Amino acid sequence: MKEIVIAFDCDGTLLKSTDQRTIAPADHIRTLLITLSQFKNTKIVVWSGGGPAYARRVAEALGVADYVDDYAGKNPQRPVGITETARRGVFLPDIEPDIAIDDIEDCDLGTLNLIVG
Ligand SMILES: [Mg+2]
Image (cartoon, rainbow, N blue to C red; front, side, top):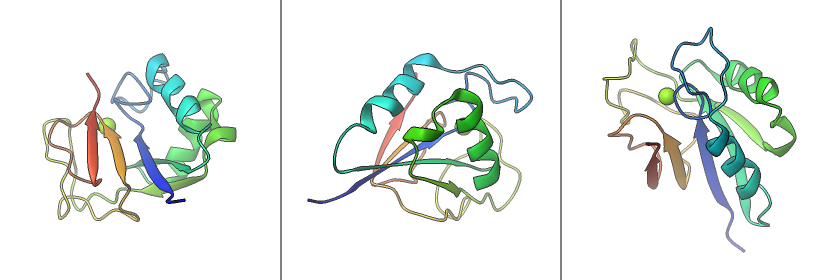
């Protein structure tokens, strides 16, 4: 059974806003995380350019920490805004997920990349 690593971004993905002072859950993405965690061969990661500790705080604030297997950093190599690219080189992530779910349209951090609407 191949494990599928699914990484959820925080700002603008699990959270509606990219403003880290605002904790407003994107309910459909939160529900998706919980649903995907129920599969036998998924590994759920929450990651952020803000680092693994910030990702953990977001998961705890959203009440989904029990469904998360690990936390990681995307490790931006320079300040990254919503209009920036999300490609390797701009980020040097801790992991390479099978599926990355992100709000940046040209996200290319996973083998497959799902962009939130
Ligand atoms: Mg984001």
